[in-house]
Image 1: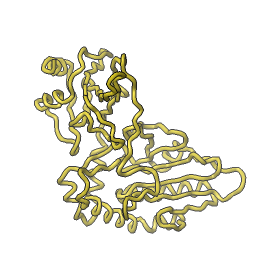
Image 2 (image 1 turned 135 degrees about the horizontal axis):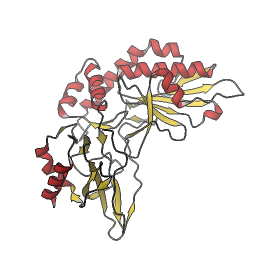
Image 3 (image 1 turned 45 degrees about the vertical axis):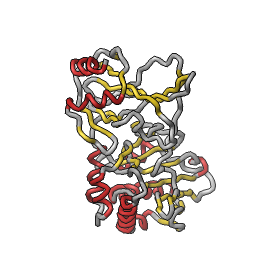
Image 4 (image 1 turned 45 degrees about the horizontal axis):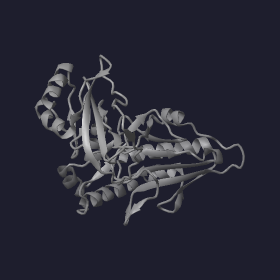
Length: 330
């Protein structure tokens, strides 16, 4: 069954919706550093010809390079096949990593930016080099300047240095996982965020290659599931913020174990969490809005399993199962 889109159906009377932008550990914005930790590899690509600047087409680039693309929502969950003002996130569906960020907002001036997050997988670095090379080919005479290394590259030079870039990425992964100051280790991936489990933190702190990292990131994102996102609403009188979720019939879903477990580094304080059940076949919402904490507690008998340190994977649930669960929560 296909993942539902935007199922958060609630009665907004007496409350107003909040537009929430998340600040991330691993921003897709280029050139950001945390201490001495380089978080991205960014190419500033300038077409050298003075007139008739080439405007690159995102879907065409994706098809040529065997990639998929989309755009992140406020919770850094990818909206497939969408682009926003000339920007998009590319990824390889056969080896999904952390996403390659494309910024073509200044395409009319012959200027683009292309970046990948660090740490990332060797496969994604290879995809990045191929995509940069295709952009270079389409633009003709162009300069590709790396912000972090403060030097220019050609497409051929990028391909020749894939192994070096991968080694630096592996060292960065070791350092990231070895940082004991972090309460949790969160990575933004191509399709959604990922909170590392303790065993992965321990393993990747000392890993000598990126093979398990690459396999894990792809396996987590190759699932045909719905990654739950809340609708944040604020009471007009008390200003308290609630997080509202929707679980859909017959849809395998990823849900946070806490109502405030979404990527919320803007430090919004969620005071309450609720969940509703959606009957997909009947195209309606079941009566009732249930406390989120009790919902998670009652799910233990329904075959849920861990997805990452902050999320669970809920198996497809029938209408009867949802009705029984609702009865327990009333």
